Amino acid sequence: MKQAGEKFTCLTAYDFTFAHVLDGCGVEVLLVGDSLGMVIQGQPTTVPVTVDDMIYHTKAVSRGNRNALIITDMPFLSHTSPAEALNNAGRIMREGAHIVKLEGGAYLVETVQELSKFGIPVCAHLGLQPQSVHKLGGYKIQGRSEDDAEKMLEEAKLLQEAGADLMLLECVPADLAEKITKILHIPVIGIGAGPHCDGQVLVLHDVLGITADIKPRFVKNFMQGQESIQAAIQAYVKAVKNGDYPSEEHSF
Ligand code: KIV
Image (cartoon, rainbow, N blue to C red; front, side):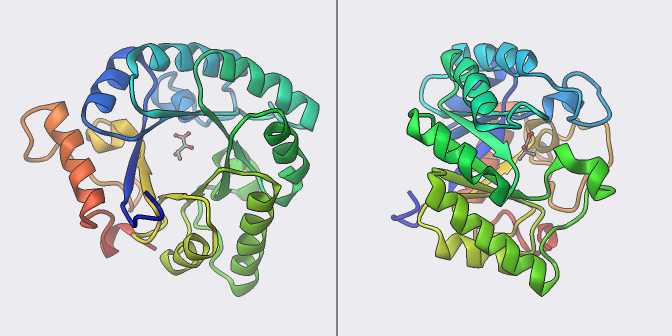
């Protein structure tokens, strides 16, 4: 799809029923995100989420899915060494994930190489990394300064070279995300990263307008004007594919 210039869609899925609905609406990628800590469990951040939590939800999503690619997040401190990452990623892959997603930069090169070596596809996650929210001091846009942008671009190249199969950019200025998307040959999924990424992802509950918390600028409620959840999801898919979403008002 990247080579053909066709945008693809991704939404978070945490359970059997929604996985079935999203897959049926043509969403190509389902993300069992550790955002489930906040969205499903009511935790203040993603930090308390465990590998067992991710496995529980991956199993449910896998049962509801037929066609979509399933990405599962490696939660906080589940990949502090290549050996630990391999063990935890292996447990997650056995339960139905097709790719594991790891938040982190160049320090993960060895880990990505290790997972790749053993046949585990990896989605690298750059930009805002919510598992590091306490270190970052909040949910802030990343890569705004020239130095930070250059560093992110270099890290993206290193992670691709290490074997990453997919890249996710979260809360990154649109022009930087565009540059990274053009330079990498692997597909780039954006969230709050402007319209030029190869694919887009949002948290399902944000798309349906039922999120309890403050909504970030890049979020759009696709339920507005729709009569069913399926119609809202189809509107999201259509808007991403034809380039209507994200627009400038949803980008940084
Ligand atoms: O956990 C998650 O849902 C994510 C998305 C916000 C990209 O990582």
